[in-house]
Length: 113
Image (cartoon, rainbow, N blue to C red):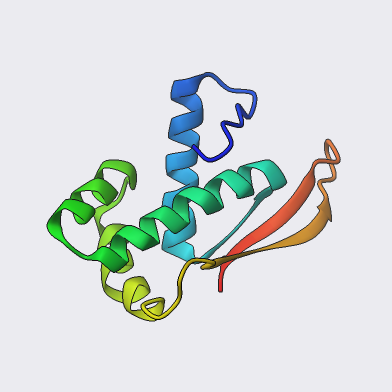
């Protein structure tokens, strides 16, 4: 992981949470979450898009090992890879929304550029 943020979870739960966040983010193009989770998700999602730009069989299998839905992998390799073919990184944007009502955690919207 990028900065080895622990996010208050054991390793297996943290890995599963990040896999689900990345899958949802690539599926819908936008998610709302906290700042630290968004920063970790951004790092991993950009790596998945870079794998999609490579486009070979090994890259597809690496993406399938991390992303939980095969349809999302197909979308990354077909649409997102062609959309960002000329771009060298920086596929995502983090926009701050404000504090969450319950615990005042800083919320952000993570979206594709």
